[in-house]
Image (cartoon, rainbow, N blue to C red; front, side, top):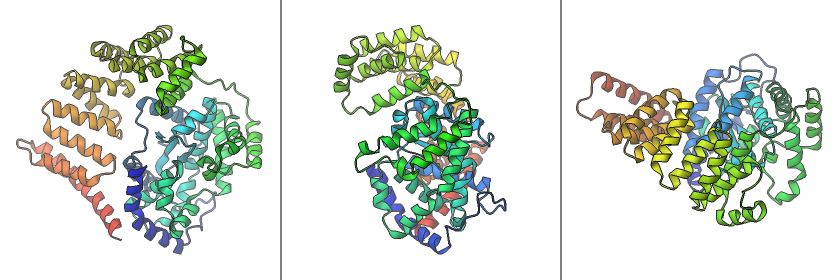
Length: 486
């Protein structure tokens, strides 16, 4: 959060200038939801804004660095999106590394969910209900319409403002609130908040999406109701979700009434959901030693009765350096359910933590043979390959991954390492350039490409490719610098 506060302080001058201009332009005069005049920003502009917005989010450092948990969220989100009223829309879902309870929809279909909200949800249908609500904000173009009057602003500033406000709202709020205290910026926050009509429409459309995707349509109102009932437990700082998505008794009743028009579906949590929730819990434990002690007291040496309880137990054992015991528990889970990727990945992590590199590689190799192209397997496998001196194999594996996952910054960072380890200097600089750019550091991205241009022995194709990319990035950098100088 300290790093984000510094970044916001650098952005503040541009934020204030833009917010003031928005206030003068009558930002709150928006087209009706049913308006088809095309006044809102185009889908192409929305997608471009989304990409720039996501670069700002990555730069904040608040995206949860857990590929497996993010993949679960992405899979769940894609299933919902496929049953939305715009199934062809290209959504991106990601976890925010914050224990606050919140979620948000950014431009271009980028939807963030706090790790704290994931852990708080008691069923997959509850988590899906929140995500379906955010999907509806996108498909109904609520954010695009509310931001339409900002059309005179350039893409970098627009993206920076949205990232600052949304991340500031979805985390504990301290950094974002400190940087956005000026009246004009506060006015900007008010104007971006969705209207009551937007929220009601997102509930209605979201519940329809939830039911069509095969989830319990009551998942959304149940989650809302539980948050409202527990408000007193949160003291003076209720979840930000209740601030950004005000939940009233009337709204819960209306959502419940809408859910009643769809068939009730058993909302038993799926095993994958329970495993990922347990994984996120273990990641957040401040004192794993104390938690393990409590776990043993209440669950006994077996670690619990359900697979999710045993999985969490094994992760806790590993977090406390008890790798042999953790391996034993995870091996049994894997034997009982050999097709579950999460058990294979956790087993490999435990073996790696115990420095059993040959066994670690064997688990990854076997898993990747069964699930070719699976990024949750490929990335840790590539890292382990590099640790064991197999950089050439890692390089080819990661090169393939860039074609299937061109916006995954970690792929490029690992590719740069593999390229460096195998003497591919030009590819090292090119991969690092993409890594920097995806994380919002355009200047550094250009510098990497210019270093590559100076290398001897480049082919005409390599030189032309580098120059073309430099030209693209310099155009982006020019816009960014123009905004900072205003």
